[in-house]
Length: 194
Image (cartoon, rainbow, N blue to C red):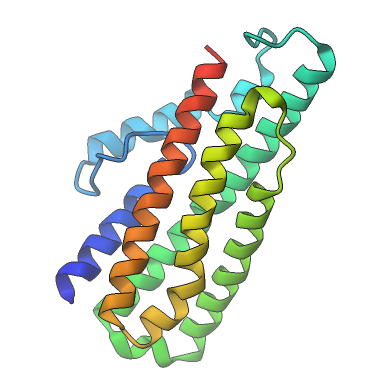
């Protein structure tokens, strides 16, 4: 149980650092230098920065360029929200691991329920984003990612309030898969702006 919980916590911490950057899924929470490098990459070139580029290969139509800019700005905002929610989730998990009885407190439940609702909204926002045709591959991978995060979000409260090891393990698998698809989507988006 403790090993699964620690793995899960490590996965979530990596997710927080990589959700908006597209860093590889092979990073671990103990690789501080990689996390710092990832943070620097976000500062240098986020999806929002890509939306400001004037010359986007494959886009010559001004309307398509505008759609691309709108899409990437919206995506950047939603991914920032997703990263924030994953950070809150990591804190909730850390507290639950250190003291399982905390999951019975109103403060923990309220924070977890609020985070659940926020995550639900972000998942829907990303799924429903109007992507220009040039970003269809990106949106397809994002949709797969959001399916995985949806499972995790739907089962989070049940898994951790009962400290259900098998559900926590399934939750962790879906979080990892969601992160994998998210990284693939961001790699495809980066490739479009090169």
